[in-house]
Image (cartoon, rainbow, N blue to C red; front, side, top):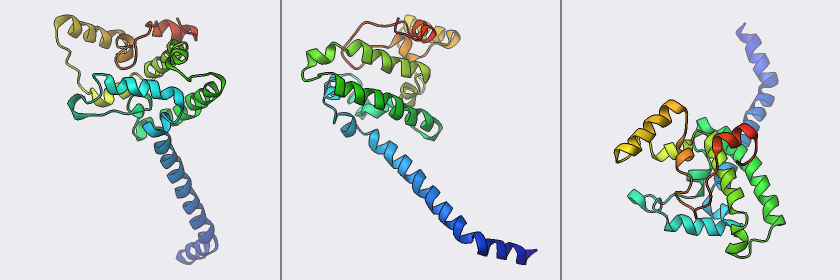
Length: 190
């Protein structure tokens, strides 16, 4: 029996080794590529994203508790358990944003603001679908001050809401809030 295994490995060992090397290379390329595509430098290489990046640096989220979040911290789910969402975000949202970057003129902030609500809605819907996983990565056990905020958080837990349902304008320039539950149900911005 042992001789049979040695012969089998000897005959197929090269193919197995080659397959293992290729698999490791593909995994490294996917993980490394995802990390590179999640960097703030990559995100802001498109002119349009320089406006929200500047807003982030002026927000209360930037520098709070010594943390300087980047684009990926809010817009790309992190961790192995969320890797599928990160890849989907790059493929679906990234492809859409590249096409829109080529189709629209964002040479000044006024032109960017003309599409701001639509872009904010897409970002909010991602957070809604992800149950605000990127918010929860930093805010592990939120304890809001004040009775009304605590009551709202308690309601959130029983109603099935998520962070973005109430906190739609925390970091970037404020735009009209949208009804995320209705938008999800109707498949369009409400």
